[in-house]
Image (cartoon, rainbow, N blue to C red; front, side, top):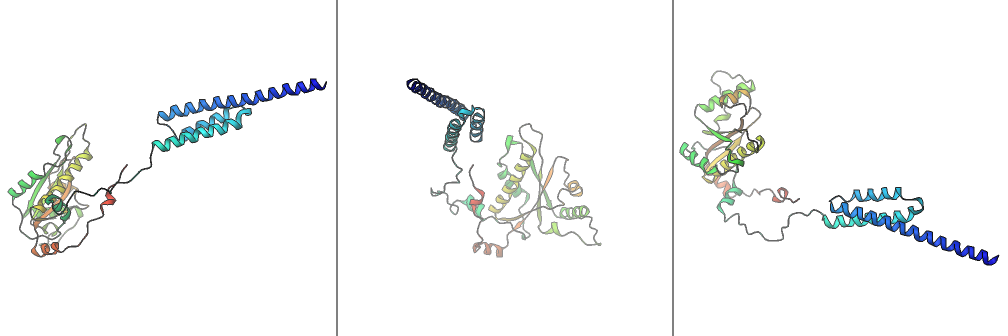
Amino acid sequence: MGELMGGHKKDKGKKSAHKKHKRTTDAGDACEVTKDRVRAHFLDGNTGPWAKNLAAQDAQTARSAQSENYADLAEDAAASASDRTAAVTPSRRGPDYSVPSSIDIVADPVLHALSTRRSISKVDPETPNDSDLLEIIRSISSVADHKSLRPWRFLIIRGHDRHRLGDALDEAAGVVRKPGETNTKPLRAELLLALVSSPVTHDKVPEWEQHATAAGAGHLLELALWQAGWGVMWRSGTLTNTEPVRRLHRLADHELLMGWFYIGAVSERYRQRLTTSTRPLPKPEQFLDTL
């Protein structure tokens, strides 16, 4: 009887050990399946939260007898996938400024002109003639221009045409002046150049990009005039594209008036101020970053 009971206990111990081994084996097999699924999805580029959700779903569907062992193994698999994701996707780094620059802004005439350019709000009466303007326009026609559409043009405004512009601005603002009075804003320079953005229909170049090209031509105009020794101020305002002002500039419906460049000579007094100016340029770090 005792032997029978002892034998029964021995058989029961074997069954218990077999069940424990089976649970461990089943859990290990399930874990390997999970690892394979996580690994496959990782190679497809889907990791992180997906791997964790997958482990959680497998844990919920596992048999209750395997739940404790399976949950631990699934958690390890998810953690392993997360570690691999972190290794493949490094944290974002900023620009590397450790290598010294070979650029000399002072020595290079173009870069020096770029860094010293100033908008001159009050210019002297002398202006470039129309032939000068033609050469300036020739120099800026290299502006970045997708498909070379040239979606921009300038209008010369001199003499009495400046009074016509003042009248159009008054009409747009609803201003009625006394006899003999005039809008003096367009009279702040003897020469104004109006910049017109004139986009065309193109399946590969959207309208906004063509406006950007026109604006680029405007910035190059300022730089070219500055380098040629002229002062310039780019002005616009809320009345720029009102109906009376657009009518004066003969704009088509698709065109956009981007303002006026007030051009004239730089006074000697201002030139002297520039030689001693200590106004710093903005810190370039704020404009440069990496993905």
